[in-house]
Length: 284
Ligand code: NAP
Image 1 (cartoon, rainbow, N blue to C red):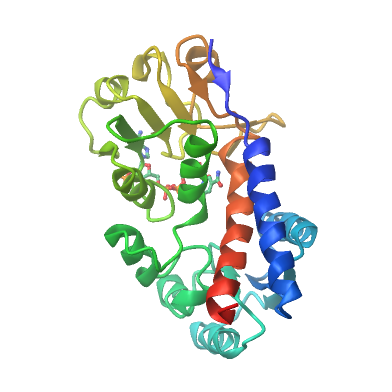
Image 2: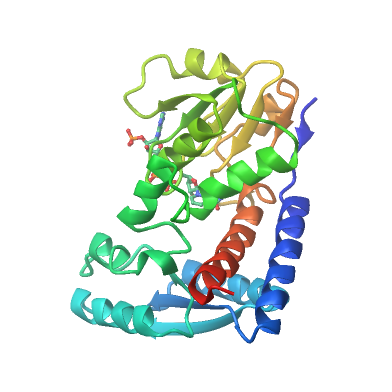
């Protein structure tokens, strides 16, 4: 029977370290601050923003909200980013996405100053993840998966890791982080042949396909660690992930629950990045 790798203790441990770092910065006269940029009033964005504000306040990070009207243009967004980049009191920028279709999202992501890119959305941050240079921040969800492995004592070195999904937000950067941690990594996607067989051979399976309950007994084998990144509204008032829990739980050795797994660590990682970005910018 799988041990459930809950996210809460991982998030608590990260938040404790972040709060201590924020207190040290404050003692040196520096107040870490995160700008949250939202376009319009999407329910998902509002919920995420409320949660981020609550958790940031708990560790002593100041949040500055910037809300743009839904018909904002790419040029107006670019100017807002330039203002935030130039504002020395802002240390991190979180852009809530997806942006409305009239805005060039890639252009706006890359308009964020690399040192303030705490969510790892710029090409510069992704290049740093790719090279392992360590001067940019990894996307928070990918970093949260690595934090879970570390907290629960699984060293990826020498293990076979299969990442299902190749998005720039999760799959690809996580594959790079696992490779950096000396795992032997396979990235799977919609054109992969024999996904089930490839997954079965892994020691670590990361389900990040964005397909509800698609990873089941046929993909899994005894002793595996399974990180479920998916988050889906099942339409019946429940939330589920990419993994079929009823089939996975009796088989694998560890599994992250949804909700309460990877997602609950992601915000803690974001706030940790804000504290680290502040220290780098303030050179305390
Ligand atoms: P995405 O951009 O839609 O990417 C999904 C990836 O999965 C694509 O690379 C796709 O392959 C691959 N894929 C889809 N169906 C597949 C299949 N049947 N077999 C093999 N590969 C398949 O999604 P995302 O942004 O990476 O997010 C993935 C999931 O994580 C979503 O459920 C999302 O809600 C969740 N998420 C969670 C967090 C968190 O904090 N926990 C954060 C971000 C996202 P192709 O490239 O070939 O299309």
